[in-house]
Amino acid sequence: MKFNQLLFAILFFGLALMGCKQAVKPVAEAPVVSTPDAKLLATVYNSGFEHSHDTYNGLSTASDGKIYYVLCSPSIDTAGQMYCLDPKTSTIEHLGDLTEICGEKDMKVVAQGKSHVNFVESKGKLYFATHLGYYSIIDGMEKTGIPTKGYKAYRGGHLLSYDMKTKAFEDFGLAPHNEGIITMNMDTTRGLIYGITWPTGYLFRYDLAKKEMKEICALAGKGEDGKGPDFRVVCRSIAIRPEDGTAYMTNAEGQIKFLKVGQDNIETVEGDDLVKDYFGTYKVSTAGSMAYNWRQVFWYGPENKIYGVHGNSGYLFSFDPAAQRVDVLERLTSVPSKLTGMGDQFSYGYLGFKLGPDGHTIYYLTGAPIYIDGKRVKGAASTAKGEAKGLEDLHLITYDLQTKTYLDHGVIFFTDGQRPLYVNSIAIGDDGTVYSMGRMVRNGKEVTDLFSVPNPFKK
Image (cartoon, rainbow, N blue to C red):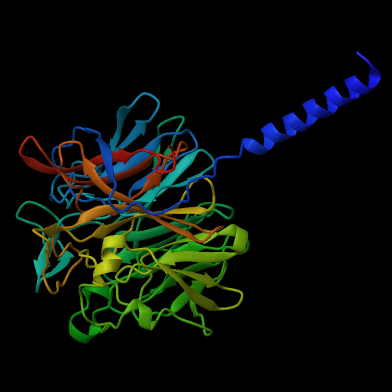
């Protein structure tokens, strides 16, 4: 082949190759959109606790890859039970009886029926607290259970730890005034635990190094033990700023309160509050809502902000402590709820709100209306306690803090067609599996147990 012919052949081949490359266009990725009509089938686990009842929080993942949880009890003489699930083997281990862990087995006192807080991990241990599950209903409101004959009054919630290697529990003592512990978080850097009691709402701090319990103040006046104008709903979530250890919480009036490390006086953020038109209008002395309190919050390190959800409205917001500014961002209610323009059925809002393992995706379990023959099923107009006012669906929502993307991934059902009810907890496994606990009918009896749905982003 002559030189000119060879050159022409090479040129022709190159042009043909370029043409092939241009002809093979990359396939455009499908846009990320909400799929509110999708059905997410949940795997149900049987923990073997026939007396189990509604659990609020009480569910966390840990560094060993296991899922730790507490199933609660409403009985005067049956305690809540602690378990862990190994996702790799789907095996469940019973870790302990809360009353026995607290050394109250033979005392004939109102049982340690609940753990109302999430586990906080530090140095190989999980820290948590106990609460009572036995109530008396007075004027339509839940009050500390009045003991029946042969039983003594509730002794108070305990601060506890669980060593994941030795499987040993440690009891750090009782909450102030023999009340349950309804809210807790831990400054793991400084070894300080902060808690709020129920029903009054005493704020306290426990120093692990000093083994010292310190009552700070009554955060909400007479709290949920108050009557008439003295009633105030108690905050259910504390956020802690890792940099300086400041603990943040709210009251029914919407004030953001904070307690600095080493201080015994609580202060109020002056620059902003949670009284927002978008959140609704509340009479703060009326039971049956969280009023202007935030429902669930966490500290977000990349922005040095608190992110939270207002329970009754379902609005996502951020709070910047440095700027003392609250920004209302997005309504995290389900797409069906948004279309109705109505509030969801759970009177306090939902606690299943948590940052995922990627560090920027929020996972949220919330309600959605049910339609029968095209008509929306309505619930009760009002209630004086934390409860579902009517039947509703359960939707999984995510919100990406980096891209500001809201997604409704659909409605969750058990494989037998049941809806998970009274869902107020969430944990996200290392592989993106979403765990929670809810009511279900098993063998003709209503119980609460653990369930999971697959990673919503896994195709």
